[in-house]
Amino acid sequence: MGWIRHEISAAVAGQVARRLLQPHYIDMHEQFPILKNAAPYLNHAAVGPWPRCTTEAVQAFAEENMRLGSSNYWEWVARENELRERLAALTGAASGQDIALLKNTTEGISMVAWGLDWQPGDNMVLPRDEFASNRLPWLAQARRGVEVREIDIRAASDAEAALIGAMDENTRLLSVSSVQWSDGFRLGLERLGDACHQRDILFFVDAIQQLGALPLDVESSRIDFLAADAHKWLLAPEGIAVFYCRDSARQKISLTQQGWHMFEKPWNYERTDWTPADSAKRFEAGSPNTMGQAALHASAGLLLEHGMDQVTGQVLANSDFLFRELKAVPGVRISSRAEPDRRSGIVSFLHGRVPVSELYRELKKAGVSCAVRGDSIRLSPHFYQGENELGEFIHILRSAIA
Image (tube, rainbow, N blue to C red):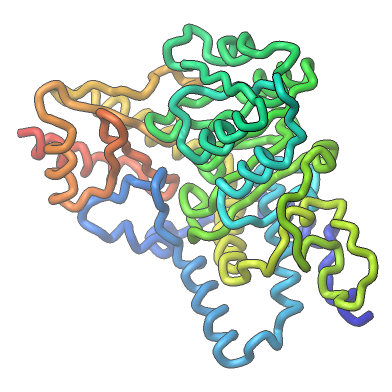
């Protein structure tokens, strides 16, 4: 069977991922032409701009497809497997075998929500005010007799303790966004994971507002499932996402979709054994998003080359700068939590006198890209930006208020 020869080994891909973990100099203005704009782009918590290497990867893939069709298909397969290893490095997964490539975060959450064998009387715990993707699939389980306990983590003096305290002998799962979408409130994943492990409760993490900006380690945090779209802090397109599933948790999820790609050797079209893959590929039913893979492969490689320690350091330095400078602007009140262990790449604020809609309109008119979430304006700069861009924003903000 000739297709066997074309699969890249996990060992080789792992070596590539480990090499990319070494910090590497990146010319930010070369990789991120958006820096040349007069006003800063502060909206990575919504959609991140692609770096140049990602754009070129997509252009090269399109050109190759136009000229050669799928003649180099086995090179696409090699890139797909290398991408799994890069995502394993970013998430802290033990192996690329634990990584599935899905369409979006919602697909990963829904796969677990509908795949678990819930029993009447079961319950699950969830922070209040979660983004709809990490709320609606769980609420839909009410028809199967599942109680969803939504906990106000912001009102609690100890958010993790409040979530843990809501668990009992009938709790099957805890699902949290590691960083909250509206104000950047960050949770302590290791503490939550330890509590779930001690109680034999499954732990799901929506990491869309953390992966690519802050470090993640699914092993030390004892995470069973993790999902994150690529189009925010991972700096890649919409339509492709990482889904992590711990080896011991895979068999607990009944498959809700089936197709040709969910096997270890999907190109063996004459198979008679239709047993799903033991790896996380079992969750990939249909044809892969090969163009999205080319893009995410480049973006993940850029982050790993730069080094996630360096990425995290700059992301948090940006937040520290915004906390400090926003406090100095008369009338501004920061709505994000100030404690160092709660900070993330998101900083939200409002003004005591200027309505948020009016202030947002003035910022947008000046070319600033940000977002309104609730009663606040949400800022989310990334690692390739710094005090020059953020200082320019503070200048624009003061003018908008005046």
